[in-house]
Image 1 (cartoon, helix red, strand yellow):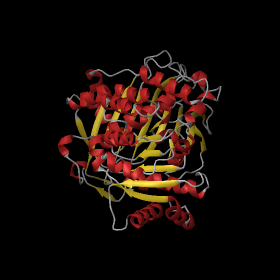
Image 2: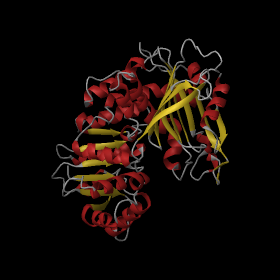
Image 3: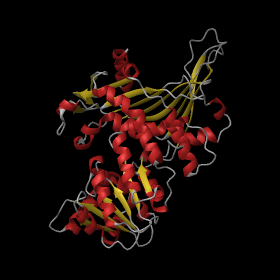
Length: 466
């Protein structure tokens, strides 16, 4: 695959992640010889080629400073091109793709609202056999739209050539949960309802809106984080063991788990979900305006910037174990982790000790680290207990490293860490009852001050929901 076409070439995703990832791979010599990267967008400059090149160089300077100046210069002069097109207009897209003599990788770095017309245009273009399409999630806005997109894609491409991207699955620490489970005899026998009390999967950011109102105010925290990413991490954490880490085996087990997640009733949504949005506050020394006052936000939409949901898995392994998925913006600190909380021992021989804290296995991002907390004898009194943490650090990564893995898999045709059609639809099956309950006002939209602690926001929301 020697031709990559990025639709949405002047967008934030391309600038922050795609171009830096490609530049890093190019510098390392990991892109195919003779590759061409074509940026397609409706934006125009007096001199399109030089204007886009300046945009790329600026992006690399801001987001990929580790890439050498020489590699950046070669990238923009020898590899990258720009073509202007309206992605919703078939004739315009066809013109931008010419010539279509060889297979292409078409990367849709676009808002979900324009996926369908862009795919219609690509279908009309008649892509060469072997072409691939990569689509950023969220995949659709609900179950019906996801099903419609799948039908449209399958009209002109086989499933093996469709790549629904969730870059969380390529972020170094998160797939580690599979190695911890399936390659260690000490853990897998404990990985069920008999030994695990609850599982928490968290993504809490200090970032506020950061100019993304055009996308985020229509999506909200639940679609952007929980439906889009955290459900995938739940699958890796809770699925049954695949016979091999082959794309079909792994994705079959993920879909099995997704199908076992119980759909919440309206009453369950009232007690098991929290939604809120940030008000004015302070994060560090930075004053943060209320979300409703951010530029581009329509307050009447009631878009949440914080969401939590507690889900149950109806199978033998996980019956009775709550899975807490939580994500939010403008919080006091960054926390991206999978935390597996084990049950306490049934009898504690240390009569003089306070209740020991539970053993928790954590897989963390930023810093990338895996830890296990254990209770041991205290240093001064053998009948006291204290908790220690055993841990290992992963090699530090640049923030766009996940997209390096994404592009390598896209170019090599490896679909293992991408989302299959039925999996995308099952995620909406789980999510739709929650979103419907919210739309009907069954769960109040709370407000928290920017800079609040995520656990405290969730606790206050759960108290309201009870």
